[in-house]
Length: 301
Image 1 (cartoon, one colour):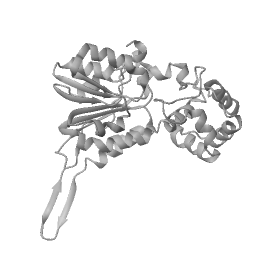
Image 2: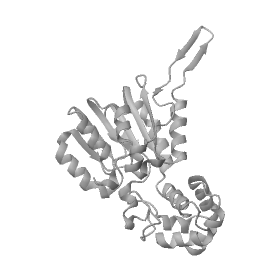
Image 3: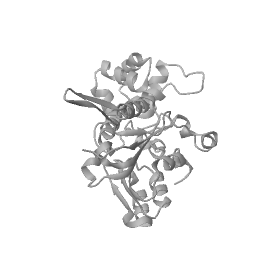
Image 4: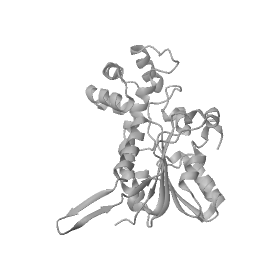
């Protein structure tokens, strides 16, 4: 792993995950940073890692060689983990979003900074971003840009994209730059649209929601859930899920006294944990990172 693949908030992830002997799930394996750290933290730790991206196979093979049977890799979406896990686990960590490897590989088509095919798929299935632009009605494309990219000029950009039907990242960026001037703050006016299409292509928000719903049954009592997100929509989903599953519920029965039950999770981070100044200097990707963590409170039904 080189400097481009520094795991974000690694120290905080280990602190809240508390991998002191047990079975842990790395739902977003990527460059293997969290997995390697968990396996190195305690010789009794095991990791089951998931990733839909076939490009990371050599990294998984290297970790398998180093840690043997303590590491298992499954090439699949993290939302499928309940299909593969045969036992409860002691912790689950998720690093939501696109990895540095994917962004920095031009032929994957994730970034407006590199010329490549307009793909954006984290795996090798489903329509590419170019195919999505061509297939969607203009109004639906505008909705995607507005919802997932929070792009105020979504309708204007959607119209221009439908007119041009770009096939490469450079073409798409050029279309957007023609419609919108570059911001004075130095950011790129194409950034939000690229982000929105990537989320839509990979169904990222639904993936996150489906996975979170599985965690109460997958985690053992006192098992930890740690989620690092980079987008306000992702963080809101995690926050709302934990809040809704941590509140005490009151059950009333006319034949019995009031019964109070604890929620499924105890929230460990009332506010999201952010990167400190030292990490921000070393790893620019950490600027938008937010970590939330919780602990399982009761045995699943």
